[in-house]
Length: 253
Image (cartoon, rainbow, N blue to C red; front, side, top):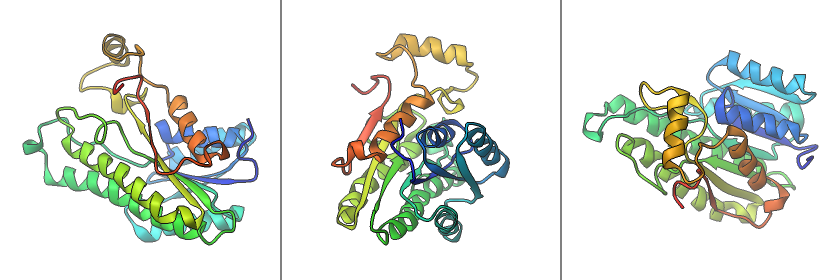
């Protein structure tokens, strides 16, 4: 498919996992891709994978919790490729695994800063650029089934930040659809990344647990989450505004 030829897509947290899969998927459909994250080498590897497949990409190291840095990423995207047509706010962290009363304040603040404030700062920079363009743009935030859709022991703080991302997405979508900026979210459940592993669990252990507990019998692939993101960012979803699309192997059905 070639839905994004001539368009520029920005992906935060694109050095691994879901973020890398999203970046590769956009490049495979013709987009110029700007990848950002806190560590340079994983981003460089994502760029190498895109370029080896014949695509074009730019890596910009930045921390989404720093306003000036995410503003600089947006500026770099426009400077290199001429516009910012799509943005995916994927950067996030999970700290916890213990009851809320035992969670360190630093772990609470890190999750709040990265998972929620980082999305706000990125959204603000992206919207300001997109509403200045005649073509507008599309934004997809990565939330989670933990939060607005389901809760699990040991993840209260993470769930709170991700539920807030879902609410922020819907509010921002209403604020800016008349500016030509279409905003939605994707909420993944368990995905084949290290974040889905319980303490001491191997991938084989996780897959066995998924066979017994998930309606689909397996966790989602990163490519399946990427496919949902690309749909919401594409013209195929031109009338989809403020939705939160769940991709979770049926866990919340």
